[in-house]
Image 1 (tube, rainbow, N blue to C red):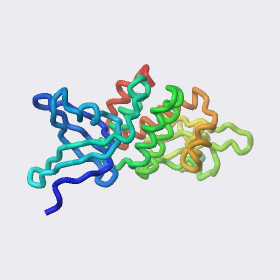
Image 2 (cartoon, protein in one colour):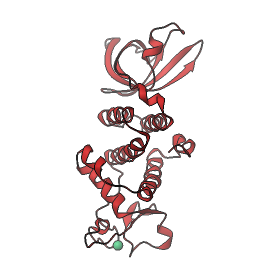
Image 3 (cartoon, rainbow, N blue to C red):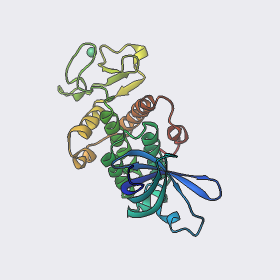
Image 4 (cartoon, helix red, strand yellow):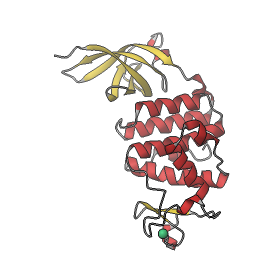
Length: 253
Ligand SMILES: [Zn+2]
């Protein structure tokens, strides 16, 4: 029988109360994906401050193989990320990240998720909004469901949105085809998700280049709003239903 006590790297995604002051943590672990573990102890327990949402550390777990349950016996925090709780935008971005991890059943990449939480912990609200778009695109790419932005899926014209000839062409994402279409091909009913050339270039840079370079690219408010609309739709489709964070995020994000 496998050892009942072990330690592993984990990020606390959510914490919910159960029973008499006990809590259950949803952890994203580096080696075992998602894991639910009980956190026992009342208000005076030292674990209370350690096992808190968006904190990462080494968790010591005691597992009962018969009941298939886990409990956290200690948590050595390596990343506290205190600034996430100081702004509504940061907290909201972290909550959406946690919801995506949970609803994609832990397929979210460990490095990607922790990099995003580190990023929003030290960013302004405006940077967090942009960072969220890059994070969503990476999550979708990682899951293999990010549509191709380099060519129209119908006429195969390449470089449609790049603006190679000084044009500023818009690409349209068609939910019916789950693909992008050029302005010549997209019918009126296929124009709900316009992706301006600047926005498509931003996403491509997010996938191809260093984070620093992608951050430096310009993205006007209209392009940012278009990307939010497009990426929130794809993220909802990825989890197979509407995202609670997106529904409650109006006015915040
Ligand atoms: Zn076309």
